[in-house]
Amino acid sequence: MSNLSGDLELLGTIVRLQVQTSSLKCGNRPRSWYNPEFIRPVPTLRLDDGGVTGLDGEDVADVHHRDHPQSKWRGENGVSVGFTGHYARMRNRFGPHLADGIAGENILVDADREFAEEEVTGGIVIVGTLGPIALEAVQHAPPCVEFSKFCAGYAFDQRADTVIADSLQYLNLGMRGFYATLAESSPSPVTIALGDTVYRRMR
Image 1 (cartoon, rainbow, N blue to C red):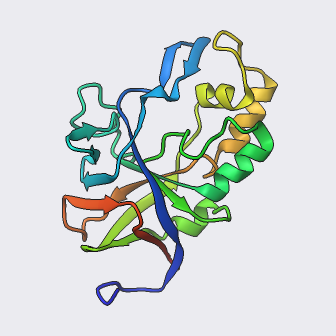
Image 2 (image 1 turned 180 degrees about the vertical axis):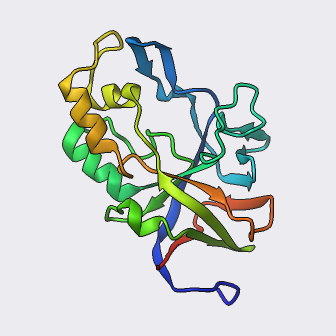
């Protein structure tokens, strides 16, 4: 911790790491759906300026990595972070099918509360055995219609309606998770492991 500057607040520890091997949105609207079967848990992530790669005896590229053949990388979405407290809230609203990690974030942090976007935009710091890793440009990950239909239990061919509009609003502004990028001040690539501790920079 001696290498870290600024005030930090502990958020929790990493309890799940995962990658999306392919897009989780299938079909064409309005007959489109969310398919979580392409989420693959991994014990370790490698993070560089192009996004994340899972390490599980082999390299497993995330579909949001810049170098993935079907890349969905846009620059700001190279790594995503979620919190168990958000999943508890989502299960209260939608039901038990909202298992931890099913939204597809790369890093799931065990924290029993929810975080508003303004609480994490100062940056996130992950600390493991190899030292601190700084994430910056933290912003909410906007929910899609397909995930909102999945949450609400809609069939793949059921059109979005006011229920889905309300669900989109509920899942927005961080409830579904946050995007971030590796800070220029951090070495690249870096490795993130289960059990690493996660902090937020206090503004």
